Length: 166
Image 1 (tube, rainbow, N blue to C red):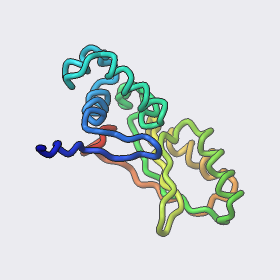
Image 2 (cartoon, rainbow, N blue to C red):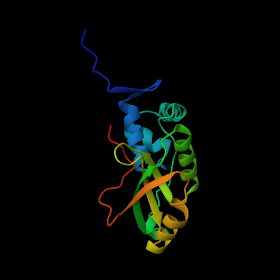
Image 3 (cartoon, helix red, strand yellow):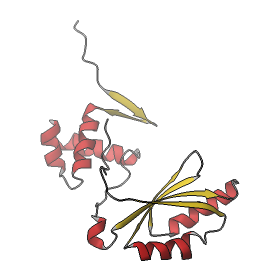
Image 4 (cartoon, rainbow, N blue to C red):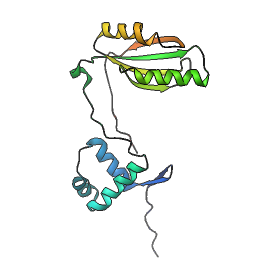
């Protein structure tokens, strides 16, 4: 009996992702508004299995959400700043309180817990330098347990994507 071709698979938690799922994910990452019918034509499956695969990946947490990507410069958020933050105290409660506060700061669009000299890396957007200064002095620096903050101003974006490689 001839060998079956090996299917490309990876397991994410309790959900297994195969090559068809990956093809579907790639299409959705390129255009979240693509129809199930269009996907089915491109991945060579009928619409029902495509719909079931998408639903399974949504329920399994592989697909977390669908979003609209906005050009920040066209909505008066032309300044991007990377802020490296270290906390004074490193207890679980202090860290949790900092994280809750960061969620309330609309200027912070991304926050990462990092290793090294700093504890967190924030991606902050603001209208301009004056708006960032106001945010830094009157909001970010006032966060309880704030230690050191280092601001790095983004001069240009070379690559910015939401699409992952599989």
